[in-house]
Length: 44
Ligand SMILES: [Zn+2]
Image (cartoon, rainbow, N blue to C red; front, side, top):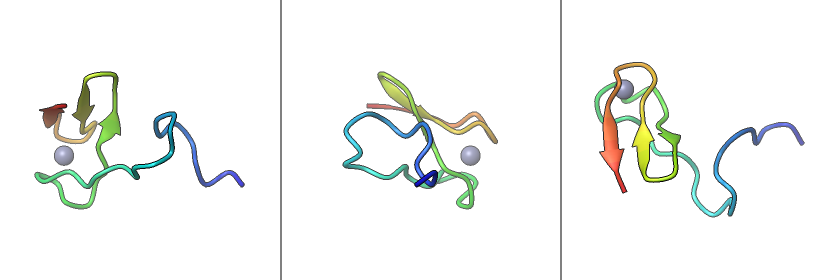
């Protein structure tokens, strides 16, 4: 309990690592994934 925070609704896919930072995770939004560290964005 408590390990999962704001990672989507279906819980089927853990967040991907950012391809730019590699050590940072991408935050999932409605239509895209976004890295808060380098601002990398990948559209779904
Ligand atoms: Zn990044």
